[in-house]
Each structure stands twice: as C-alpha cells, then as structure tokens.
Image (cartoon, rainbow, N blue to C red; front, side, top):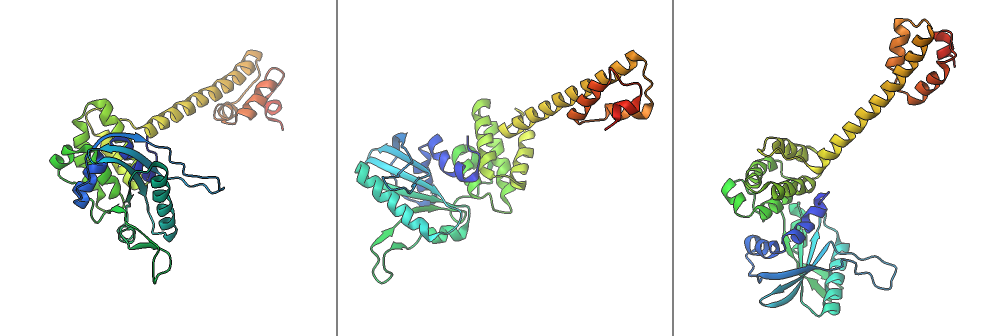
Length: 297
C-alpha cells in the first residue's frame, strides 16, 4: 500500500501495468503499444561502486511491438543531477537487458514538468554528448477529472490524475467524482483504492478532506491509518483502565484497614495517571496509618 505521494505515483503502475499505455495515449497522444504482460524488475542498479543507484519502478513489459522496459520516476523539484541519474538508468538497463527503455516522469508541479520536458542534455553546452527525452505527465497536461462518468470510465487513471493534482487549490472538486466511482466497485477493491488515494495525497488538509468524504460513502470505508488510530485509542483506553485499577486497589487497602481518607485525597488517588507513583502508593497502603504516610516523599 502506498504511504506517500511519491510512492503512490510510481507504485500505481505496478498495480495496473496497462495504465502506462493508457496514460501515454490519453495525456501525451502517443501511440505506445498495448502491454500484454508485465513483470516488476529489481530497482537496484548499483554496480561494484559504493554508490547506490535505485530507480522507483522498473517494469518489463511484453507488447505486440516487442519487449519494453518502463522506467517510472516521480519528481517534485527540478534537479539537474537527476538528468545524470536518468541517463545512467536508461543506459544501464538497455546494456543489461538489450531491450529498449522508456522513461516516464511524473510530477505535481508545472514548473518541474516544463523542466523535465527538456532539453535535458549531458556534456558541454556547445556540443552535448547525450540527450534524455522522457515522457512527462504533470498538472499542466494531466486531466483534472471532475465528471463522475469520466471518473468511472477508468478508476485507476482517475486516481493517478487526482494524485497528480494534489497541490491544486481546487483539488477537492476532483475528489467527489472519484469517490462516487469507487463506491460503485465491489467493497474490497474500492477500499484498496480509497486507501491508496489517501496515502497518495500526503499528510495535511487535502488528505483530511479525502477522509471526510470517505466517511460519507455507503460502505463506510475505514483506511489503514484510521484503523491504526482506533487501535491506538483502544490501547490508550486499556492503559487508562489499568491505571484506574491500581488506584482502586490503593483505596481498597486503606478502606479495609480503616485508614481515614478524605474526599480530596480520594480524588487525588483516583485522578492520578502516573503509574509509578500509584505503584509506590500501593506498596505503602498496607502499612500507612494516614494520608500523610501514603503521600510522603
């Protein structure tokens, strides 16, 4: 399950490999061949040098036009060092597998999208040694899906589109159509994509808005994050119960021995949340002759 926007932007293609072709055709009007079969490759491209080189996602796709390597890289900011990395990834993969490699760059920022479209070159500016030509999808060319019927036509693409527009101040307008489309799916699949979208939107008010919409849906979806929150709440409740039990034991010892304890002291004992302090009082209760003996430091 995707936990961050960066992870969601590349993992979504592992969940639905055909999305690669649909995205290029729909967003970039590119006649990329239909993917018939796909497998996920190891993303570690480190060689014997002590420099780690890791791609976000690499897919080995079988198409009618032959095998293709699909390299998928989310990129938030424009960084010239990434050009060297991308060139390395592509040349390494083509050299290792002897299969054409295609790079898709995904970004939620228009400025980064413009930069990634190039020209991206390596070598002296007067005569570059190499050029990198990635496909680039960003908020300036990714559809902003607000029509429920359009959202339902390709739910996974709509998830990708929403995540790509997560920085748009009007992103909430695209949430309800996706939520309605997901609510038409069978519960297990819908729940998965609800949670995937939640992680892909990142922490903050955008994710909070998505969670509020989730609560209104007919199946009452509960995300992994909210389940974890409930578990934490239950654990806190159990902890409170244990503390209250120790406090009651302290008073039981005192009452059984006939030690006079006023209302203020009883409230002090019952309202105490310090387990170590309660433990100390519990050890003193069998011998204390008054409240002062119990509370003495």
